Image (cartoon, rainbow, N blue to C red; front, top):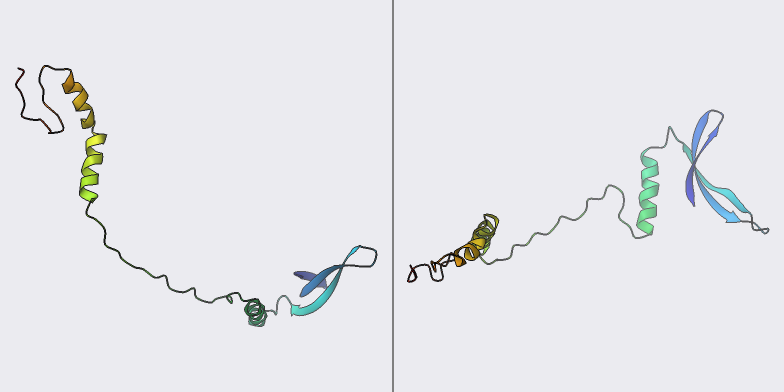
Length: 120
C-alpha cells in the first residue's frame, strides 16, 4: 500500500492505494481509502498516521526520544604524561639519542645517563 495524490475537477485528493495482481498476472491498483482533499487534510491525518505507527509497534510522530543517560567513570591521570611524550616526539627530541651517539660525549638525551661525561 502507498499514499497517492490524485486530481479530480481541479482538486487534489489524498488516497491510500493498494497494488495487486489479477488472474492474468497483471499489476492493478485499487483505492482502499480516500482521506480527503489535500488542502483540508491537517491534524486528522497525523492521528491516522500515529495510530498506524502505534499498531506496528513504532514510536508515534512527534514523540520525544528518551533522554540520553550520562555516566562518569574515573580515569587514570595519564593526560599530562601523554601530552609531554607527544610534544617530545613532535619536536624531534627523540632523534637526539642518535645525534648524541655520534659524538665523543656519552650524554643520554633522554636522561638515563645524563651526567656521564667520562670520555671527554
